[in-house]
Amino acid sequence: MDLYQKTSRWKIYLFLVGIVILLIPWLFANYLAKKLQEGEQKKMQIYARTMEELTRNTDNQADFTFHQQILASLKDIPILAVSETGRVVDVINCNFNEDTVSLLKEFKSTGIPPIESFGYARYIYYKHPQTMQLLNYFPWFQLILLVAYALIGYAVFNTSRREEQNRVWVGMAKETAHQLGTPISGIMGWIENLRMSDDITPEEREEILKELQKDSFKLQQVADRFSKIGSKPELTASSLREQLMMCKEYMQARSPKTIEYEFFAHSDCDPQVMINSNLFQWVVENILRNSLDAMDGKGKISVDCIDEKTHIDILIKDTGHGIPSSKHNAIFRPGFTTKQRGWGLGLSLAKRIIENYHRGKIFVKESKIGEGTTFCIQLPVYQP
Image 1 (tube, rainbow, N blue to C red):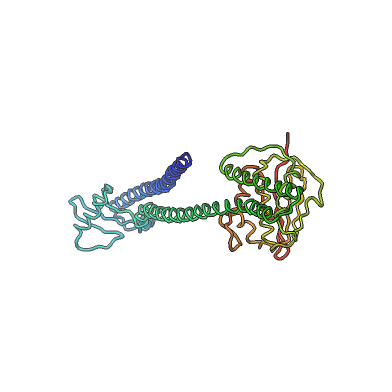
Image 2: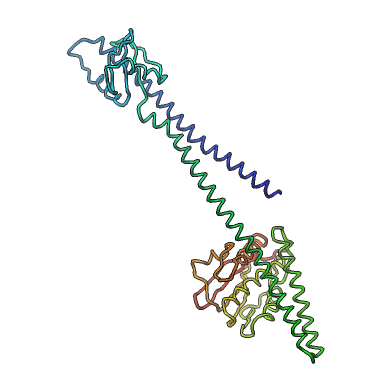
């Protein structure tokens, strides 16, 4: 229930952030419009004073160049000059027609107060230019675009999330079957061996019982592994060599005899690392299973470790088909697989276990098509 509460809380936060993102350009556009309106009002006041001076100055030899420049700068502002009796005496920067009464009503309907003048006209009415009108519509236009973008993004995100959830659930179910399949197959094989062997020796019987015990223990491990997914596991200082050799012993007994295992052939390091033994062995066994599938029952698996002072590199190499470089990162995504019967969850779980629980890294260090692949697991050095 806590997970759903967190999700709802994040939706509220995102909604509030979206409102802030919408308000910022809205307020900024209104600020710009207000400044432009103030500038237009000052221009109209200058225009009124200019017309007053032109009206008072009747000297034909006077220089009106400056006045004409002022009037020319107002070419984008529609202006209506009205006498004290309410008669339109001049129309500037808009279509003039004989129906001046309607034109005056149109200017008054804008709500912009007129500028009083003492020149040839008593009142100067004006309207905002087209650019100002477009600026007023801009926040609405931006709001529509953002809402449309948010709705499309939300629909795509929901669809993608549902598909990923379906892949994860299907993958988890198949991964569970896959994890249980190895020990169950082993138990069935040993039982069949006991049934077919009439003259079995005590030593052979003891060996079969030992392997049966290993497989039953593996079933307990599988149950424990899945119970730890989603919770913080307990880490303990462990011998890395011992953990890897346990993985080798278990997998080698259940692999074809044509598979060669070579562990620590080029290294004798045995560092202590902080791990959860069960989950770490799950990661290694998962990579080893992928290597077995990639080699089609024949090849070599090599495992070595390198002490890099700050971290330990565990290199797991096989002689399988190889992985294309374009898929080195994709193989760790839930649902991605190159197998026809695969489910694509094992490596994504391995990545989560190493990176989230052990503060390490897992990646494809090297891979060549037809030659093999080398996985690298990096774990921090244990510091007591």
